[in-house]
Image 1 (cartoon, helix red, strand yellow):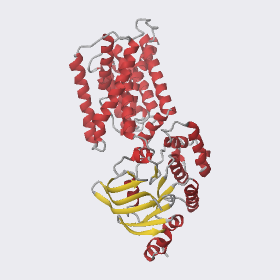
Image 2 (image 1 turned 90 degrees about the vertical axis):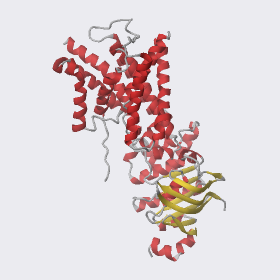
Image 3 (image 1 turned 120 degrees about the vertical axis):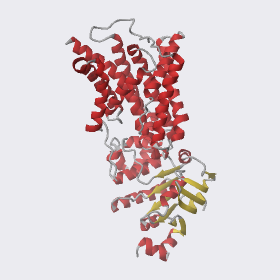
Image 4 (image 1 turned 135 degrees about the vertical axis):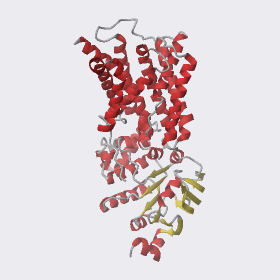
Length: 237
Length: 289
């Protein structure tokens, strides 16, 4: 399968502290790839490195184009939607304004309206809360809003940073179900970061395991799930 | 009673000017959490530009429009050239740059136009003298300020660019992930606030005469206005300006006399910082340790 995103020997730093060490990773086009790891393993750093939010070296290729020298805004415009850790809600803006931000540079208003309706077909609850201030939404709704904002960018690849974080199990299930639909119906490739390994491995086709900034295991999700060490440490049985 | 009313009205007029400068400060504060101490001096410089354009024979409104446009560009330029490279620098470095800007603009005004006060025209002075309660120019100030406020409100509330600027100020990291060019949004914010300052300068110059230190006092009142509004609320700053303007006049007339008027602003600043740091409309910042 053709990768849509490829990382080759990527190092990344927070100031003087190195967070990633020679990470190699490729995300299959049209599929779901997951990156597992404990707290502090470098999962979020990997996503930030891709989007140019960290100092990084090595090569990052998106759809045949090298993006490791580009700025965040430009990388996003190429078709990568990053749904960040903490959801990145614009708390003082309304739900509608949050969504409008994603299409600020688009001129075709009819097309935008059509896209918003499509996003609401995944997240009907957002439609009910259109005029509500986004900061007053529940955690699950804010996560939905974050994914919806990402979708409004019309991405080819979505980077999702722990969408299950701090949410009730039922809400998590709902969100993962929606992500599956988005992957199937929109043809958006997904790169998912999760601490909840069982959940992520259910959704993913391919999986990577990070430990202290190094990729230690990679392969098809089914095989990673059966790995003895992964099972014991990350799946807990 | 007439004295009281005329003091209130003229307080509202000067208060509108304080409010405009306060608003300009708030616009920069909300996106950078810094107070631009040079706001007043930049406005004075802009006012000199307007004066010069009129001296070259441009009609009032043409000079007005050109000055606002030039000030906007100047504001954008200052942000791009001087402040943008300081992104992520320690707070103190940025504050020093603001003070540097204060001195530069103040000295430039003096060096180019000298330190003698100039008469600055008002488009309405010639037409009428108003009533005995409010002068025509005071009424003019209030109308212009309110119109500007409405224009800014419409811009930030209903345009896509205004929305992007608000988003960039609120959550720059997340705004970048929406493809918004945050650096340019900040620069536009500087441009707008310089333009607002220019309008305030042009409004106040016929009252206080144009000289390089024209805005020093105004800046102090404007700071008090912004604080009353809660430092992060643009309409709050404007209302704060009116409050300060009226209070200044009434306390000056009935209590302390004109010599101590300036003290009113200082007392207000200290009182707000001690007793109600969030002002009337400010949002409280809560951070977990």
